[in-house]
Length: 381
Image 1 (spheres, rainbow, N blue to C red):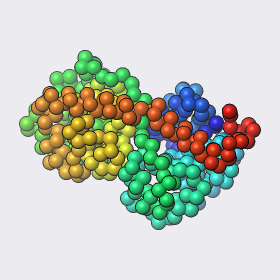
Image 2: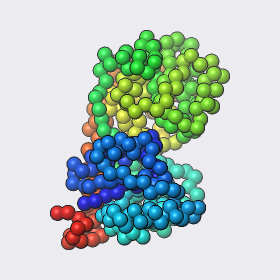
Image 3: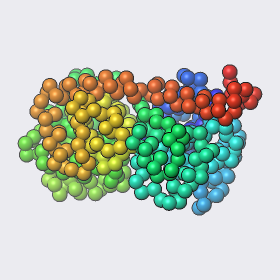
Image 4: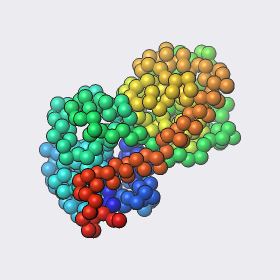
């Protein structure tokens, strides 16, 4: 079976990380996978290529403003003749699906990775028109699937919930902490709150800064490490300065070495205002970090309050600070939550399990769309 995973671009982000993990693993379950970056390749493309997975570049922004880009994408799909096209992110989900359908691809799936509360009417209409020829919309959690179903008005059986997943690496040991902090330029004598995510409004960094300000006087060794880049970096740096946190907040940029990042983190915080299902949350769980996250999107589906982490309402700095405090004071709670989080995440959210479920959808789609007698040359035995 040949599958192409189409992504808007392959910059660093949650959906792109999922494409990276899935594309590297699909061959192990009998799927010959390739990846298409529609607008530009980005750094994740190079990691995919180094794993031996073909990466194609369509170039441009398919849509009314760039019809030539749509034609290039259509030609690429006709040349590659995939059995399955699986699209990720907005532009790919709309115009990638449309191109796949025009190219006669037997099975087309679209990944829905976030709760989009303000989808435009045009976007919703296009989703509705594409639904009949889409085998499944793959929602990253139940919350995302429920919102999509209500917004677009499709039947429940058009939506498949396949939870996001990661390739788990080495779980940090206590002795890894000090070297990791030194590699990141941080003081091993400090207590580190860590967070990872694109610096945008969605991720709620400003709320976390205000929670840190409330904790600062009681915890003089407490510092915050913010990993990621984005358009709000300058604004967040200014907010940290205004709150008197200049020496406590460290912007460490994009970090591809996740093991070092989590080894350096004492407590992981995910303060998102809205969310699909954060890969950073799953990674932090798998690394055995005690976690405080907001109860938005799919977070409550994977993080059980009081057992694998703590959940708080979004956009409430006082509630966030109140939840962080016992994790800084009680080593028993700190250790118990982290240990149970690691067990749960590694059992439920491994990339191997995710890819097995995705491949099953691909096979079911082909069985439904082209029947058991596959066209010679398209689908293997």
